[in-house]
View 1 (cartoon, protein in one colour):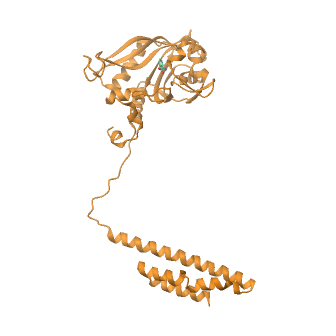
View 2 (cartoon, helix red, strand yellow):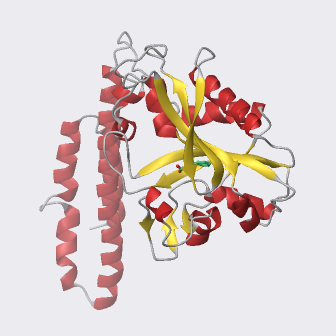
View 3 (cartoon, helix red, strand yellow):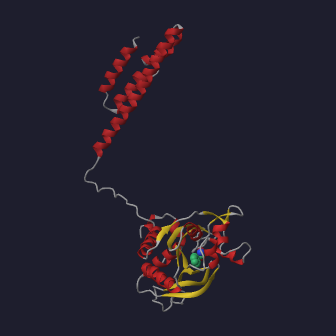
Length: 331
Ligand code: PHE
């Protein structure tokens, strides 16, 4: 039997097949147990070796080609059927546009405020050494101040940074005053409840020059706080302690819900804590290669999730990381 003939016949038959039923009978005719191709393949064993090989190869090629062509035609037929069913009067499908995450939105607002005050943006590593996370920031080993953060350690010397203050040191090592940066990024602490996640975000500010005062710090932080929460909000500084700043302060913004009168949201104090700050400790300058006799500066650090929770009045921080669109789309 002539392979060329089978091939030609198949192509003609395929051309004429227009329905699924046509294709079904084509399958029987060319792929079934009684098909010429199948019979020819089975009788290959009767041939002498040379002929068996060449004919076997040709037949196999034809068989594959038949299978492929039938499947292609099947697809083409179901495609035309689907098109025929399109109802052009149906309402269109909504095209969902994504947008920035609320945490990113807060960052972008803070960057804008920072840039308007002359700060540029800096970054540093999340996997950090003991020196940059602690030691250089005036927190020696075995110092009780190490308790201030429950740090994830990779080894004794390497940790996941518990704050963005590492960027202060790294930046001062490589730049001369005047220095005016905001650093941002992920930070890590062993904390997990409604207001803490083990990974969270911070924004750090650093301003070093030869005439920087606490009054400058107050002015800058008032601009940040009012830029985020609104011009009508008041800002207050409370004495605090950080090893890397002296003097140090915690900064509160007046409660937006009660206007400072006191309500459940601010635990009846009228104030909400938003960040930590202070004048850079002379040891920190020294550790970064800057002469504390010539220069001084201020630094501040805030948790972005906390700012977002206060700004949007959200009481469960974990909502930010559940990826529930019903929540995220509200921003
Ligand atoms: N690093 C401090 C923290 O994580 C915040 C801070 C930064 C305080 C800079 C003062 C100055 O809590």
